[in-house]
Image 1 (cartoon, rainbow, N blue to C red):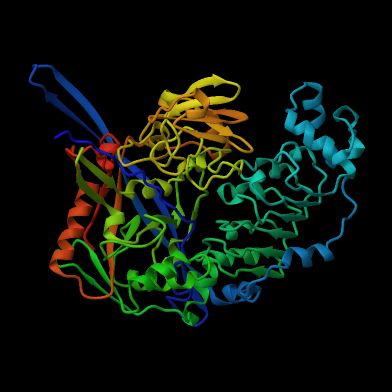
Image 2 (image 1 turned 90 degrees about the vertical axis):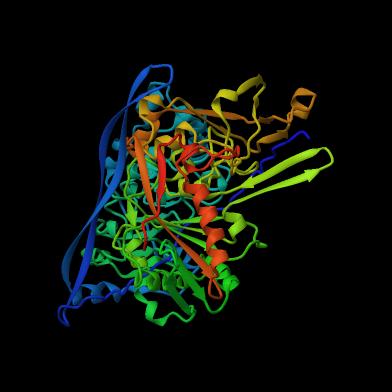
Amino acid sequence: MKKFIIFLLLISFCGGDIEETSEPIESTPSNNEIETTSTTTSTSTSTSTTSSTSTSTTSSTSTSTTSSTTTSTTTTTIPKEVYDKVSSLFFYEQSYLLAYNWEKEFKIVPTDEGCQERTEFFSARWSNTLSNKTIDNLEKIFSKTINEITSDDILNMTKLTIDDSFSGYYGIGYLTCLQYFDAGSGSSFWGNDYRFISNLTELRFLNCKYCELENNPEVLYSLDNLEYLMLPLYFSNLSQLYNLENLRYIDAQNSRGSCHDYYLLNNLNNLKEVHLNGSDLSSFLNQKDIENKPTLKISKSPSGKYIELVVEEGINSFLSNIKDIYYDRDYLTAVMNQLYEEIDDKYEVVIFIANQLEDDKTYAGFMKSISNNEKGIGLPIYSSAECFGSKGRLRGNAYFPSLSSFFNSKTYVRDWGEFTIMSGPLLHELLHLWGGADIIPYFQTELDKPGAGGGHFGFSTGGVLGGFDNKSLIELGNNNYQVDYFNPVGNSIETPMSDLEKYILGLLPKEDLGPIYSFIGDPIVFDKYCTKTKGEEDVFSNCFNASDKIIYTVSDFEDIFGKVQYVGKREISALVVLVTDSKVTDAEWQLLDEKVSWHISEKIIDDDGLNIFEASDGLLKLMLPKP
């Protein structure tokens, strides 16, 4: 009987950020002092050389470098009144009208006439290096041709609100006299390169609520005149704004981190209000008042390898609250802090798996980013780990709604033969912790939303996290392209890690990374199997039409995000937590062990799927230290 292997195309919907908390006043040497910890994490490498001899008597020598992470913690004693002073400026209620109310009281003031001298617009116009999109935007703003724009126009352009009629942010960085800037909303402005904002040093009012500024927050650090600031969702460096001494009002709702160093905001002598609804810091400071605390029982598995998490309210209660974390972050705060009372702080990832064979969820798995200490990958350097009970080690959490969603391999028999369906999104989720497609400054995942990303490669050079293989790209003319079959948000379990995915984890030298293609369209016209484009069906190919093709190189990534440290090989430490509503049986532990073993096996498995070791060519390993 002929055997067919069919791989289930896995689409994994991945989320944004997690909430964890630890007591804001955990260790109190006296009634007037608080100990705060700052964590330094360094990556060290060890190199080993081995020689092997094959049966053809040819000797080979290989050198491998493996990264390991060392975390050191420094404890600093901060007077309690320092915390109390800044905490008195915090507001925890949800507010949708901050931008509206603050705009009403904001007034343009006379500005330094030298601000127009800082623009590079005139030199760019003289050298004929302005892009078409820049010209379109500036002509729209000034209502005159590009050659008619004068120095006085730049000086008098002090207030600007943009909308979807603009071509992104092209040219905005030339407006160096802006005092008020509303950065707009919608997919037209999604992208990770916000360096232009650092040129706008006269800004006093910035509404960036719908920016993706969380990936390079350092662009704000030069805005010394800023008074009103509306930060984007999941902004990650609130405490690092402490040098912007003129800040008065901050909307930091749903922001991440700063639980260990928020006292730095005391440096802002003019600060009046910080709005924190839905933020890590809000959950951290108010965890004693959490109403939706789960009832948990935490213990080790009989083998000592895993953690059993009994949720008395039931598995579905846990999954519902975790998936709704955007609206109820406090739940996860309670879970994580109770968990860290029972485990050592030695894990980069905590993996939660629901103890049920099947589920009815619309996702196979999702990842919550908690911290990042590595430059160059499209993520900010930040930490929410302290909000969760970790001292800085924890990088993120993964969630799988059933054992089958975590890993499944099932063979079916039909009259015409056998076929096997395999799925297992663990590697997919782990890659999100290193940013995934966020390293690409501008890319598109959804057909009708230019610039929409979310960590999946979409219509760009990709790998496990979606996208296509560069080697298969064929240009058909008239903006039509053909590539091997792919899915924008996640490819099948037989897909190896791409060069770009290896690069962001430090597994590939930058010299070995070729060009990265990103396609943009409004919309992109997708032709599955190329039926319309080529006039015949090709089940191994996809075709699409996109108006723009952007080519990125390593230099582009380094200019925006910095350099990735090459480590050669990497080991990720993880803890597996089995979420259950009753005591786990021996058979259930055995089933979990079988599924975990497939993912972490360090050998070639004869099943056509690729686990972590295989997909990375042996460069990436998942380690499970016993709790």
